[in-house]
Amino acid sequence: MTVRPFGDRAFLIELEQRIDPAIVDSARAIADDWERRGLGEAIPAYASVVVTFDPARTAWPDAARAAAALAGSPPPASAPGTGRLIEIPTVYDGPDLADTAARSGLSTDELVALHSGREYRALFLGFMPGLAYCGMLDPRIDAPRLPSPRSRVPGGTVAIASGQTIVYPVDSPGGWRLIGRTDIAVFRPERVPAALIGVGDRLRFVPR
Amino acid sequence: MMRIVRSGLRATIQDRGRTGHTREGVPPSGPADPTAFAAALELAGCDDTDAAIEVVGLPFVFRCDDRRIVAATGRDVRIRTRTRIPGWTGVLARPGEDVIVEGSASTRFAYVAVSGGLALPLVLGSRATYLSASLGPVPRPLSDGDEIPLGASIAGFETAGRHIEPTAYGNVARAIAGPHDARFPDTSVTAFFSAAFTVLPDSDRMGVRLSGVALEPPAGELLTCGIVAGAVQVPRGGAPIVLLADHQTTGGYPIIATVVSADLGIVAQAAPGEELRFERVTPEYAGRSS
Image (cartoon, rainbow over all chains, first blue to last red; front, side, top):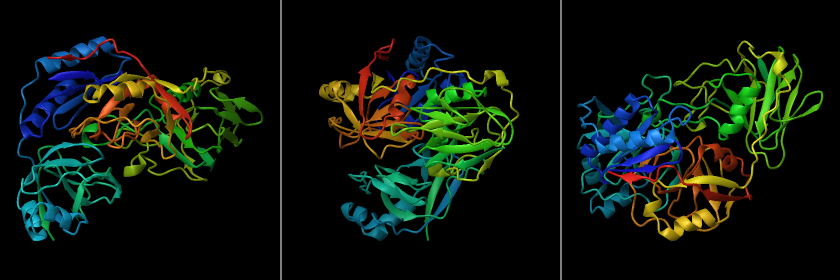
């Protein structure tokens, strides 16, 4: 594990740089441990954790020592449990569906069957409010990120990229491949919790 | 009550930011220029947890229905009531009197605080507005005629006239290399800390976009990781973006350097067409493997 300074009020702790649910679990355990110490927020992702602190309360060298100690002897990872099963009714009519199917050597029906034919696990949330990174896609689906991102993707769009699938919560820029859409609101500030999908929840896309 | 007479181009409610929901993907929001924001609160006798108004596109005009201490800060900002008063000064506003906040062509973000604070409910623990997800007690830009309830004024009127020395908005911001600097070609890191960049017009509360030297990005893809304000992302094209308050919570572009928090305002307030440079500062701790 490496620890790198990230400005004057955070550090980036990096784990082995690949997408693997076990590594995601380790990253989340490190984030939980940091937050339990009350130093500041921690942001886990696929294989890294950004740990933040408030320089007015914790001197930089002390925070650096705490981050190094945590990376040196990380807490044991635990799986997040089976979570809820959330069904996402999906209309598969996205603008990238045909192209992604073609580059994968599949018909669009086959791609839809593969995407909707398995359960995904929510690995972590990031980017925009309520956006859950869910894996893993069937490896037969070849979906690298688009070479240049769209400036606007409508909220509710179902997208895939790099072995993952997401639902865009709100209108935002985006570089993923758009394969469908859903009416389900994955983020509503007045709801508790505001994010529909939590880490560990299972997702199933149901063709409509 | 505070009544907005002229709301400027885009005025939003901001407090010091929304923490505790980052792991749900909720950005911190809060002021683009935290230093000027904090000064406005202090001058108006507010608590540091209070909310103020961030204005893009002055003038901004408001009136209060009772006596309040008000303050306006930001780059090249001043207040006009009966007289013209420099910014970064506590001002006594009489009941019903128009308070006009003015700037110049170089003003980007102005902060307007009123004693007693804005009495608005918390949404996900904060009063900050995040327009992209319609978040906050006022999840839209303020409009002419809006009325905002104020808290009980705790500022003694003797605090009127207090002054805080404004930020010197130069064109150099201090930055710490990384966290992904080692992944870049050395020439990119050297170029980043020596080149003069130009601020592009499509800069906003999410980030300041720069043009100038194209920085060669690292080979290969990076896994998405968490982000903090000040992070300097380098997308494929090589034109850096300095992320501000409304930044995404995670991102997949490599981060060549991170602007120190005290200098975020310098970056945020740089006007389109202006030059911006980055001075490398070394943290006390140089990064370590374990």
